[in-house]
Amino acid sequence: MRISTAEIAAQAIQTIDSQSAALQQTQNQLATGVAVQNAADNPVAAAQIVQLEQQQTQLTQYGVNLQSAQTRLTLEESSLSTATNTLQSIRDLAVQGGNATLNDANRAQIATQIQQQIQSLLGTANTKDSNGEYLFAGYATQTQPFTVDAAGNVDYEGDAGTRLIQISANQSVADSDTGATAFMDIPAGNGTFTTAAAAGNTGSGSIDTGSVVDSAQWVPDQYTLSFTSANTYQITDNTTGQTIVANGSYTSGSAIQFQGVEVTVSGAPAAGDSFSIAPSGNQSMFATLSQLTTALNQPADTPAAQAQLATAIGSALTNIDQGISHLSTVSASVGARLNMLSSQTTTNTSASTALASQQSSLQDVDYASAVTTLSQQMVGLQAAEQSYAAISQLSLFHYLTSLG
Image 1: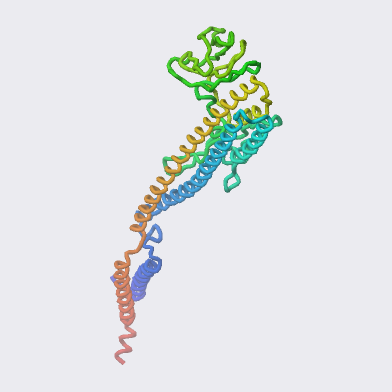
Image 2: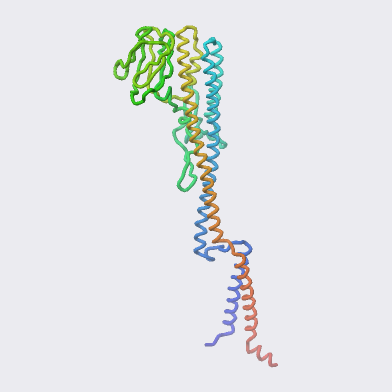
């Protein structure tokens, strides 16, 4: 078969072009440090690199989420600490307000100080983050969570939603707590039951917040402790139709036990005076503080009024203690989440490093090997060019010219 001069030239040029392209690719690899620049270079490695890049993108987003959650939870932790300090200051004022040597004007001044602290607490409950979003509003981050109505009551306007932020492929974390959780849903009284004096009491008897002796015997009904005389009492279960569950002789300061709990009445109650004992519900700390300021602003110029004040302050102190304990529990939950974020940050960083290493092994140039290949390709290209130059001279015209 005859091979024309044109075909020989075409094949030679094709070889030179192919070797030039390979040489240029190697040069690009050395210049960029990237071995797989497109799918054609290594289809299998290219697919793996794309997958690794997607995983890195996810980890980057998780990192952004982690930082956002950490910022909000750190702010919440600080806010809860501030709220706790405010409650402790109010508690100190409440103890001061219970001093029997104070007059009505002194107590009114303390009530004013407490009112100022309530405003501070309200400001803390309405804290905003760096994005201008309310921290304790649930999902309704653009709605001020706590407002004061015309009657002076503090209402929660947020919702019950908890924002979950994804921090890994299979883990999410709440980046805050709702205002209802932090400031509203607080067990009243001692956590099992509450006590209160009837408004119409005429004696000087006051009741403490009581305690549980045997929880197995406690029946959570509505009870009334009433004095049939100055030195006798009876306890009726109002839920079961005024059933008498206990009675006895009264001694000031002695514990009165019934249904697995005990309460202590001090002072001299009058016949007909009564006290309520009811299962604990939840009460907001703002309601507790409002009741405290109301009690401090009431005249206490009679033994009966002084007894009412003592009962109210004792109840408020117990409820404030419940609030402080509750904030501590919420704060502990925030701290646990912050620890989780820190741990997950470490895990994600390690995963990112491992992915980068895998990607590098697939994509990065092996410089020693690439330099060797470049040298071989340059020699091959030079040889192809020289061969083409020599072959291009093998023609009849060139032969006849050389004879002349």
